[in-house]
Structure formats: structure tokens, C-alpha cells
Image 1 (spheres, rainbow, N blue to C red):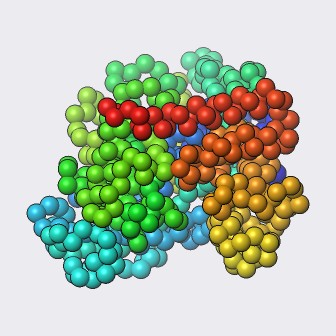
Image 2 (cartoon, rainbow, N blue to C red):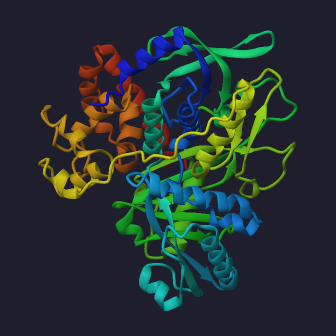
Image 3 (cartoon, rainbow, N blue to C red):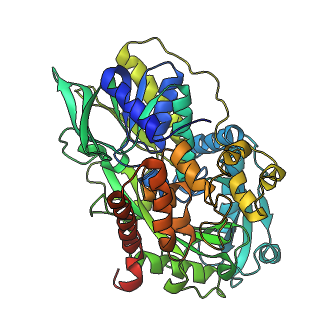
Length: 536
């Protein structure tokens, strides 16, 4: 058994109190996790902390795509796209259990972009930049496009391009990177909030932490501290004339796929403002996103509003005229913030801001990293750790060649042999190894569904607690299992039972269990507020 639990966290915190680390990484999203993995693989003693759960910020609220960013070619960001498609291709090879090919249809309509000729050239260039890991592009005439997507609007359809990118469950992808870092030797802990950086002789030498699980305090010391906190970057950096980050909000919806009618993933240009919106298959659901609007509210409270939801529903109905989806059809909605780089006063439109990343070395020695894309996290991490080597005065340490990570790719028959039905076997196949699931099947109700009609079974709650460092009810229902997204009422009716099962494993008393349920109910209420707030 590969334990990765509350006990693992306790042991890591004990070592953080005791040892001097080479690198302390603050921020457990995709970039921080990637930095911790890279630094550890190069032989540096590394600690990784996050004030919430892993991927509880931006990295767990994405479009769930591993992609090159085809649209950036229209802004001549060829270098960024080349980097991203190469990283996508690398991930398809090294994480085949996490990253999966995804066929896209991108229609061209008369009278609005993208024009067919320009689209065909863009798809040609997109293919040229890749390593030929995925099938090549195909141009579809209007009839062939309608054959591929029968419910797609045919009015003024001039044709469509078909190409491939990839998808991944974002939160589980980040978790897999964290777990790989731990296997390489990193010490990690979620729910550790930095109250202040420790400075000696005007140099950052560590951080004072507040343990949000038991209200205790500790200090961790390190030779180099890396700030990978995304939109929260400036909370740790010193005062600046302009903020480092321009946070933009992206909202997504899950809708019943049978009602939308998409067969493939689609990249659509909206009628209203010409922005790109994705319509993506997610089992029996359709994921629609994203909006891109400046955000000036509380960075810690980002929820979908009625205006964002209406925009995405309008885009869906324009593309699929027979869908007639409205707010009542929304299974769930979520919103996250992109940590885009600000350039001075920066009056560009949100969609025009570069997705490239940048490193900052402050006078106190703090290294910060901002910008970038989920797909390019490995390249970002590599650049950060290169800078760490320079700060430490070390000779370059090249990590061993990339090894596979994530769940193994095993035949479906091995999961069916566990005594579960096919939908559940398919769900388990995409998340775990067969022997991992088998360890928990003797527990009460282990093979029974948590929510009727969904494939997740109770054994997955036990795995989340014992092997995925889930410490709260929200960790399990939102990021480990995803029932928050996949059920019409966000699985609120099973929250008390899931909390009770966790309580037995984690030693919660009745008061703590009730608090967990109440916190989850509050989260659900915040994410359903758009249904009763037509003003947005």
C-alpha cells in the first residue's frame, strides 16, 4: 500500500520543523507541484505547502484541456504554441492514464471568423509545430461537418476543421504530480497557510505557517523560497508600483450531453463577441467554457454569476439550435481565476493578454513565477529550478529522464473482475490501479454507488482518505471524486454519509463532522446562487 494520508502529512510536518530544506515551494497548484517534482528529481531537499488543498485554486477550475492553444496563432504567438503542443505530446507519452487524445471540430461560418482559408492555414501550422503524436488535421466540407456533428447549426456553415488535442481531469492530474514528487523524496502538506516570510539580513530564509487543520503554528526554513501562488503572488512579494498579476475570471458549465447533442469537442467562435468557447464531452455531460473577464473582487471567493452563465448558455444554443438549454438545465457551474501577467497599466482586452510565463527574482532572494498555461507547467518548473540552482551556487543537476506517472493503463477486464458493473469499472480504470481498488473492497458498501446513477463507489472515499491525502469533505466531493460537478444538486444529499465515513478513518468527533457538512453546504449554496440572482 502506498499511503498518502493525514499521517503522511503529519510526518512531513515533523520533518519541516526539524530540517533545513534546499527549496520551499509555496503553492500546491500545477506549477508549484511541478517545481517540487523537478527540484526533488534533481536531488534538492524540497518542501511543498499550500494553504488549501492541492489544486483547490486555479489549477482545479480549468477547461480540463491539455492543449497547444490553437487560438494564440492568430496573435502570432508561435513560440508559445510550439512549446505547448510539444508539452502536450510529452504528457500523452508519460501520463497515458491521465492525458487522453480528444478530437475537436472547429466550424467556419460565412460572415464571421475564423475564415475557412485562415483556419485551414492555422490547423496546418498547428500540425507542423507538433511531434506527430496525434492524428493529423482533416478539412470537412459542410455536409461532412454536419455528418460529424448532426445537431451543429448549419446556417451559413462553410466547413469545419477537425484536429486533435487532449484532455485531463485537472485536480487529479495535479494530485498525481504531487504524489510523484513525494515518491522522489519531497515533503508535502496541504492546509498550511503562510502567515509571513522569515527574513534574516534582508534575505528570505523560510516561512511561518498556520496549520488550518489543527490551528497550530510552525516554521520551515529553506535556502531558497519559491512563490508559486498564482493570483495570490503579490501577497508574498514586497510592495510594487503595479500588481504583478491581472486576474481574469473564467466560468464553466456542465450540461446534460443528451440535450446539447455534441458528439466531439468543439471550438466555437461566439456570435456575440467573437470569443472562443469550448464545448467538450465529459462522459454523459457536456462541459462549456470559458468566459474571460477582468476580476476585481475577493480572490478567495470566486463563483459563477448569472451573467456568465447566460453568456455560455447563449453560445451553446447558437451553436446547437435544438438544445434550448437554460439555467434549469445546468448540472453545475464553477469559476476560477487566471494569473495573467500585467504590464504596467495594461489596457489590453482580457483575451489578448499573453499566456507566457515570467520569473521574478526579488532583492530579498524570493523567486516568484507567474503566467503560463496548465499544459506548459513542466517547462515553467524547469526554468524555476534552473534559477534555484544558480541561487544555490550549484552545478547544474539534470533530472533523470522523464518517467511515467499517474494511474497505469490496465484492461477493463481487470476492473470488471473486482465485481463492479461496467460504468463503475470504466470510472475506476481512469483513476486507479486494480490492486489499489481491491485493497478497499472488503469495507462496508465498498462496491455500492455513492449517488444513484453515477459510477463512483464508496471504496473511492476510502482511497481518497488513505492514499490521496483528502482531509476535508470538500476535498473528496469536489477534487477527488468530482461528484460536486457531476450531479444536479452537487451530491448534497450524500454529504452527511460521506462525512461519517471519513470521520471513522480520520477520527473526527460529531462536532467536526457536522462542521465539514456545513462547510460543504455553504460551498454548494455559493455555486448555486446564480440560479436565484438574475442580475449576476
